Image (tube, rainbow, N blue to C red; front, side, top):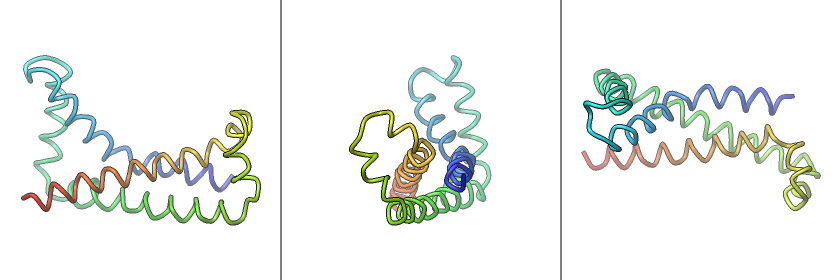
Length: 124
């Protein structure tokens, strides 16, 4: 149950950064006068117009997801002897650890977002 709560919290925490990254991709797919590129541009403009969004929504929250995700995965790997076995078993065993897979996915997404943001900050 604890892993499920962590997975849900991580999905909520990573959403703002994922929304921004998705908006960056969507706005580059077609001219800005067409939808959904126009709406995506509005999202990007909103984030860019507020300095706190960079620090909180694009850095602090993904760092929190990355740290809690790594800690949760390490804890689960060390405590749950069935987890390494489940990774080697069929999809039926993986379904029993669906919350852990969400934690792993959000952790990887957070690492990717942080890498993009830090590289962008270093380029400026």
